[in-house]
Picture 1 (cartoon, each protein chain N blue to C red):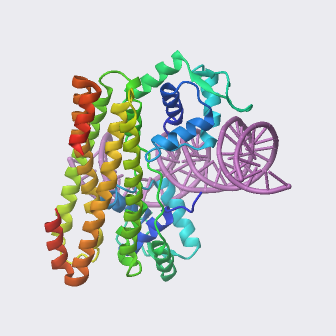
Picture 2 (cartoon, protein in one colour):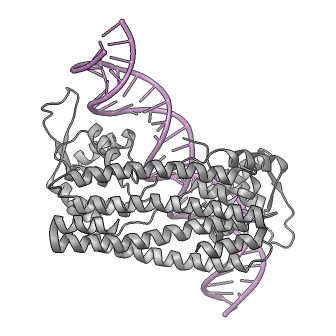
Amino acid sequence: MRESTTRYVLLGVLAMNEAMTGFEIRAYLDASVQFFWRESFGQIYPELKRLSAEGLIKRASNRGRTRDAQPWRITPAGRMALRAWLDLPAQEQAVRDETLLKMFFSRHASPGQARSLIASRRERAVARLAALEEAEKLVLGEPEDPDLLSSFLVLDRGLGVAKGVLDWCERAEALCDAWEKGGRDALVRQWRRGR
Amino acid sequence: MRESTTRYVLLGVLAMNEAMTGFEIRAYLDASVQFFWRESFGQIYPELKRLSAEGLIKRASNRGRTRDAQPWRITPAGRMALRAWLDLPAQEQAVRDETLLKMFFSRHASPGQARSLIASRRERAVARLAALEEAEKLVLGEPEDPDLLSSFLVLDRGLGVAKGVLDWCERAEALCDAWEKGGRDALVRQWRRGR
DNA sequence: ACCCCCATGTAAACGGTTACATGATTTC
DNA sequence: GAAATCATGTAACCGTTTACATGGGGGT
């Protein structure tokens, strides 16, 4: 299996924010890239130790924090390692979509299954859209943000995905309607109309 | 971690096609749902044995196949298990997008990084779009397909995703241009124009 | 004779989540 | 005084990929 991406996530966050604890890194991730990347503590803490052993990060003073806090700073070597990774082409990761899978086998499920699958997918997309629009306001409100371009790039994709899901929900329901009311012919007509 | 989805994928494929070997199941998956679900042999073969031990599938005769071929058929119990799973709400899976991640840290990479990230993403999306349009022709050409609705539902989503990526590539490049030529103000203007 | 496809299987290694244990500090 | 938050860490477990081993059958 390929090398873990976790280390570069940690280096990236530490490159954007001077001195952070594992706990803060996790919180930062959850507040920014949460919709396309997450890390658990079980990954974060051991990886921080490894990075430290390799000299890619080092301890910072825990002034103004609780006693147990262990803030880390990225080193020049860490910045180099991060940059080297960033410049490598991104690997395509295998997407797994359980909703689509259940859709695909839908003929072998109960009658209402496809509809409720669509409904819950829509619910999630609506919630995500709202969260992203909230995030957009935050980004727009921040003056002098050096990472504004990146934020927009990433936000745009998130909004696009959410809207794409919503569009699909509409079309999927129309296809179900057509199939139920008019069989194959109506379904094919609806398909051609939708695309 | 949650219960493995693999078993239900196998049951689903065996529900759609009477009698298949592990090898054929894999080929079928690659030809149909490959763009949102994949399984490796290391998962398939052990899981088939487990399913067989639980009475959810059983051996079929290997007429017309090579000596070693071990085709399986789904049992009534298997169909029930499949249906029970299908009727459960789909779990949202954690999406991980390395391209977006590298975009997010883009300020710490080399100058051309964001552009080449976009370019290679576009390339992949173009290839996928072509593959899906090919698949569409196949589906449309098939008369009397009992799974036509499911095929459309899934195809539609795939096409939507690919087109969404392509749209994002356009907008992302426009945002990069605006940032390079006009700084923050131009970037924000471009953002408002794009949405 | 060689190569590719069909076909099955196993073992190791890996990445990741979950659950658990611990305890300080702040807020109600 | 209870609850929530900050904070670190470990161990078990699980799912998955990868690499490897094996061999028949068909085509060139």
